[in-house]
Image 1 (cartoon, rainbow, N blue to C red):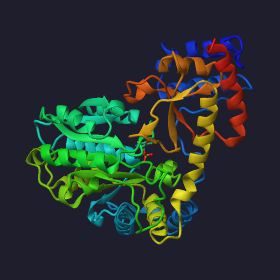
Image 2: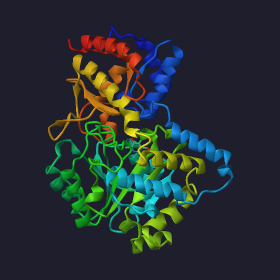
Image 3: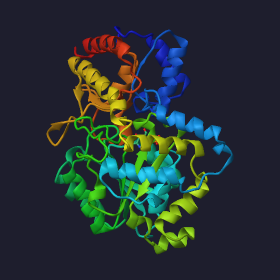
Image 4: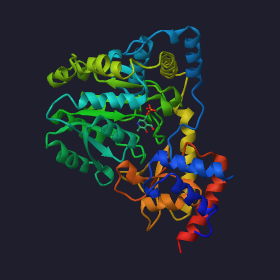
Amino acid sequence: MNNSPLDKKLVEDKIAQLRIPDIGKASIREIVALVNLVEEASDFKYIRMEMGVPGLPPAKVGVEAEKDALDRGVSAIYPMVDGIKPLKEESSKFIKNFLNVDVAPAGCIPTTGSMQGTYAAFMAAGNCDKKKDTVLFIDPGFPVQKQQMMVLGQKYETFDVFNYRGDKLKEKLESFLAKGNINSIVYSNPNNPAWICFNDEELKIIGELANKYDVIVMEDLAYFGMDFRTDFSKPGEAPFPPSVAHYTDNYVLFISSSKIFSYAGQRIGIMAISDKLFSRDYPDLQERFKGTTFGSTITLRLLYSLSSGTSHSAQWALAAMFKAANEGEFNFVEGVKAYGERAKEMKRLFLENGFKVVYENDLGVPIADGFYFTIGYPGMTGNELVANLLFYGISAIALDNTGSDEEGIRACVSFVLPHQFGDLEERLKLFNENFSK
Ligand SMILES: Cc1ncc(COP(=O)(O)O)c(C=O)c1O
């Protein structure tokens, strides 16, 4: 690593200072802390690909509506735990307009980010049936949801979907579900970190098995509409992104404002519980939380206990953003396409310098360029790659952090600005010169 553009000793000292035992295995937050320390102690700027922070300004229509709501004095008033009426109604319309799925406003519930939505949903699903104490993650996935499992003290099983796409998914899923202990299936679509997207055939398999084994499907749509291979931006007009909601009534959808509206700081998203699941009685759940239906238990027991609802002003912001999208006045997909353009260019630079895309296609169709991509370097484990890239001024997390069995790293494009592409290219060249020998 003699050609590294960074003072090697400085990086090593900072790793020691943070007491990170194996830097290749470091969590997102550890990498963030390390890079911050190195940058503070030098003039060097990293190419930061470790954290999924939106790198675009927030949607203006949301900011304006939130300011208006604050001026009207909503801060003084507790919002309803299950959400303000305009937001519930616009959410329901948004799901109809952009997914072609019918969910009544009652089941559209704001949460303090999808993070809180999944936390409450895991808590409910984990108590619906005493025999079903385990969550099944279709990985790779979003690492913080595993942390939620740990905090909740719940059990989970997981498999990497890399080798189980298409009809192979059925047998694999059934090998878990047949045991009778699974209460829910979790995945994100588009997928964080791989940016693969399940197609209708795969979602049909998931939905039909959810019906057969009576499990809840948690479809995390944090990157809603961001499979830029298809234009999903026209309200009420096909094509619509595929969803499991067309194949089962046992679902909860999670739509976050963080990425599609660049509204992460206000911590708001919605969970949409199917009408049937919302009104379903689960005797074990009722015994555990002394509530009534699944939907009421989520709102009146769990969300009430966690935060007593979601920020009042942010609810007005989200209602306005959904409304503007529903009425065709705000093309939110167009607003985030810059991520796809960055990914395309960044991928090109990696590929020209000896790297390979790890999760490369959806059943033979190349994956879209979007918020994340996965990349590997021949002969190097994902952990080694994270560690080695850190000495070349590039930070990322290893894929094994995400439940993947493949060797490589997750590259998040949102924080890398086009004016840094030159630096990225230069560093990747130096890296390849050193390691291709
Ligand atoms: C797949 C996935 N789910 C959920 C979230 C969190 O969303 P929120 O900011 O709404 O809590 C993220 C954020 O990175 C994500 O990637």
